[in-house]
Image (cartoon, rainbow, N blue to C red; front, side, top):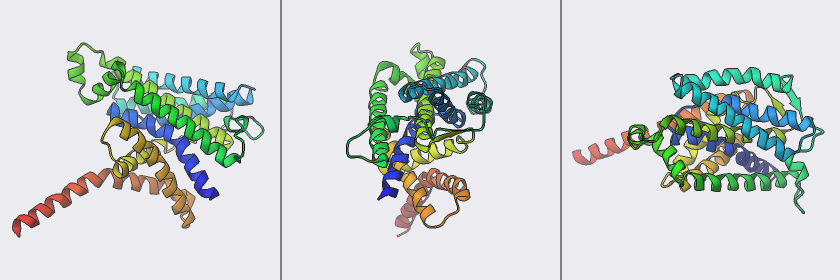
Length: 296
């Protein structure tokens, strides 16, 4: 039971990362590698503030701001300097490695004796595992509702339309560069929030904790879409959150089956590759079935 609670809790904390990746990958149609730098950036900022005596909520909010600034930098490189989005994300990610080291002062910053959001919020009758689950669920629900509301506004609809058809949006007099920057800002703010929460849950921030986060985010998005559908934007948000939990469950299961932890990145990469190729495989089978029916 403890394993189930821990798995769901981690899935909820990482769901914020998955929502951030969804915004860039699906809404803006951009593969943003900034997340591999903004995730540990959120963890580094939160850890540094906590060790300096700041309130955990303040640490999370400042981490969000730091992540948003990282997204703005990527957006500036992409829109104003006309650097391809993929390369702009890589440049920001590389720069953030040094920034994160400078913030923490060392490669790993422990939070063993520090108050965190999970230790200061006392939920009667719940142990630490259930407390993390309850707080994670509350935060994810708030973020999901706010995102659903925001992307239903005129500004949010403009960001979504920029990813779908930028030429049409420009023809309507909307600055697509601003929309791209706003999308990257929101995405990386959520990713940094996820990093701050994961660091507080794990009890440390590490400069290398962002390695592979883009693949984890994509895995959550793709798994959620395949299993739970994409009928509407609300459905997509729910699918991404559930996809993050399912991904964590799959990881927990394969670890229980004896897979070496060092092979998890390889397993995740293979899983994402299979998930991304599923639409093509389904289409191939459909064509084969139709041809067999026609021959019959």
